[in-house]
Length: 270
Image (cartoon, rainbow, N blue to C red; front, side, top):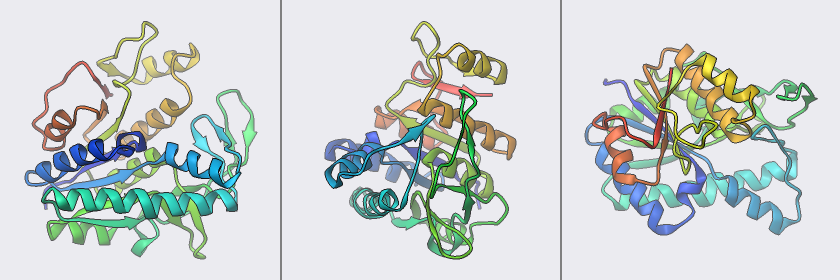
């Protein structure tokens, strides 16, 4: 089987029906040329649901601290509303999407995340946040890909004892990209790649440039998690890792099909 492309979609790309349809059409078209696995986020919808439920939001360096009430909301929003909407949109566009969570058939087995060391040097417990295993092959996904399906994975993982955990979407995408031996990891959101101190997109970022951006305060919060995920994917054998502006759905589709050239709204991580 051809090595798959792993697409991580930021939840901000899926908040409006028209944007979801555009992304879904691009995915369905690209899947005719390359096997594709989707991992999606949903941060703003989770935030809204937490606020409606009167539950305070807590994050550190772009990672959500998750207690049980927060996890209940995350499962409802991610595995329910967002995943189902995206699957339906891809199928309406002619694709063959299947909605899953990481808890299905050991798609994303996890361990509890150890205490987290922040950029500021503090040690913080993340609660019910999972760290994906990098060891096992996700056989359910390989079977679905072999059958021509498009797996769409919500970022809920399960521990060995069945405990559910919230998993950062960038972290899960990188882990799955490694475990599936993906050829390319695309991390798509509403930011035009990695921005330098002058606010312009950097065409490439290596480890030295990344460290300079972090120490200078140019890169922080959510982008830290993205770059960490990129490093995991590269170290695990993924050939090509790109952070890309996903608002141009046609261009995103061409990149999924390996037909997209470099452009001004993407950063290749080296």
